[in-house]
Length: 378
Image (cartoon, rainbow, N blue to C red; front, side):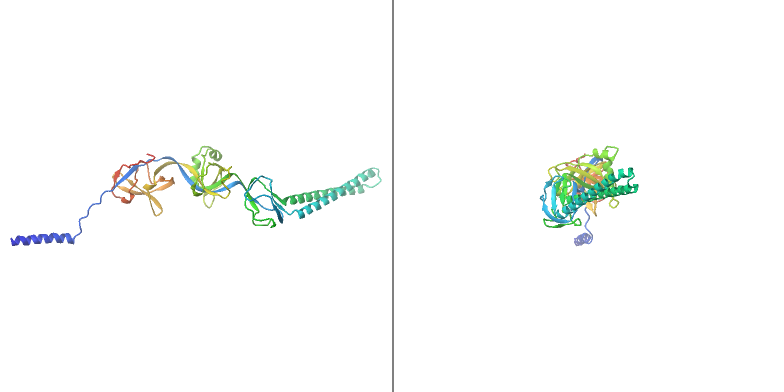
């Protein structure tokens, strides 16, 4: 009995020491269950956004062409004016006097011409009757021609003086909205002033200029019907411009211009979209973002929630036929609010993990489940 007790105590001691000295047996991790969906490639219209600068049909700097004191301002800042409307009046007195002086010179030369002509008419019959020599007649004819030349010069000087006088009244070269004034009444104006007096912008329609990369331009061009670029532009769909706060402008625009060459520095080319603006809601200098649809073939759309970012790259998990998860890098060609359009990294038939990414690691086994919500494209 005593011997059995000793053996029993020894057995308990051995079991206890074995459990305490060694590590506990490892418990296999549970296989995570994750929703997966099979993706398929298709042709999609993918919308991309490009920063745009808005300009009026005409944006004109208003500058003085003569020096002088600004006497009058005929319009108010921000007003809409028609072409030819007087805007500013510069002191005309020195230019009016210069014009009067030029007109006086012109009248004097006309009198000289008349006198020289009478002299030729007087000498002509006398030469025919051999009363005076031919030399005198030729001298008179030369004097007459010199008087005509001086008359032409005087006419040019008078015309130039009249033009200069007209420059003292600055008129609108085009119709449009007047900007802020840089000078007030009484200021001395000069053509050498660094700032214009104001600017004039015709905003009945506005141009939105934006640049796209060469790859996007080729995709855009190839997706339109037409033999020439002009035909393709005519067949292009309407475009939208997003204003501050990402609010879309109420009216669609049309693409109507492609620049002649790519920018050597950026590798991009400039396009122009024209928008109607009868209400004057858009002004020159506005900024926005052009939303342009590009047709792309063989792209796959997946929810943005099925991706994750690491070191500035976007990844997703796919599940192979053995239910093993693999991490793949994605190339995103476009996006909407909730969807990424993938041009590389996935292929038709791949099973993509939709949720529970935090439970998945590269190379582990997962238990695929049917998602509660199907992909929009499936």
